[in-house]
Image (cartoon, rainbow, N blue to C red; front, side, top):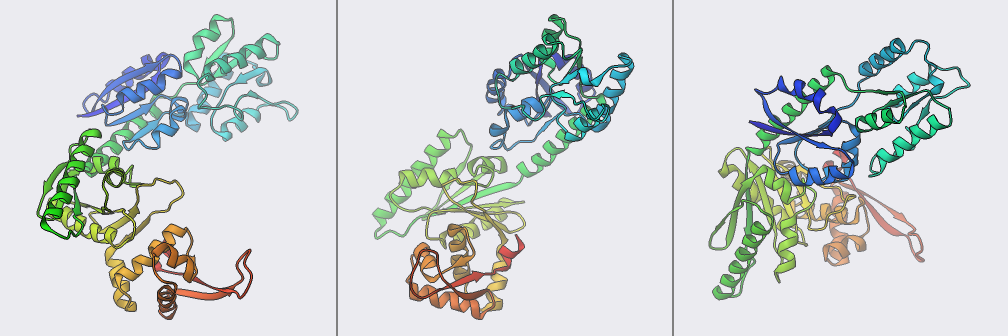
Length: 441
């Protein structure tokens, strides 16, 4: 059964318990409560491998963990006020406190700008709502203290008579100081909707997890059988070490000149950091004296996954530097995934069938098309000169120039002479590459 972790403020647990009980036949759920924001990192770190997904009790704990969640591959949702919830709270406040003057009300945050404007519309043009909305830092571990100080300071100065808060854990403290406090909680209907959304995301994720994944590594060419044996032993040893160090369950099969790896979709996500970079390539290149390329294949059967892994390996091998490619069950290719993770590197997503079809249409080899993709990826531009492309592809300028002119002839590039910044002499030819895969992105 699905296991859900609920990271929420301790004061909200009694409201959430009866709602989650209605889902007892669909999931197991565990409340992971915190008093202070500093506890959230520890709670998540100790429990992130134990659950199929997480529900956060509000935007505050979610955005407090935002950086860590970027590399977390399982489903996550957080509860937040809907516009309907917000209007119901406003109505309730005006009914409970007849004649309330909203210019003497402090609210720490309402999250949505539209909600803030709704509050301000209740006031004359000369007055505004006291709010922390524009200055609040959700990653600040002292945020509770700052919100408390904010309300208390306005109260002590006689500027407010009423406080509205979204931070459940500070309500009791503010009330103990004599402040009139209203907690703006989330409705049962909204909470149920989010629980259903999380369960659906987990079920979809499980379908992906159940796909078969295979890896393929071919050994570099050796000059003798003894050298070949040493290369195989070295790779096998490091694969086992990588498996153990990362707590993975890779099944590694050694053949005469190659290795097959079987694993799960979830472990592939972890190895590739959700298809952004390849930890295995980094590990092997740090520890081996020769280049290694890795292909990963995803399929509905292991045979299909292996076929895709071998295709992915061939794509990786066509690149100069060590890298990884992934080919999924629809034969779409993801890569190159290098061992250097960068946020601004845009991965290419294209079907091998597409590139092979283009190769046949324009009479340019697949390897040549992949070389131009390599140059574009490394230089982070589709504007190439013969020299810039030659440098990154380790080719002669003459060969690169001939290749780029061939792209122009096939209407896959245009060329114009440009004066390069900071350079004297004749203008250089700049080739603008227009492969359909890049145009599609």
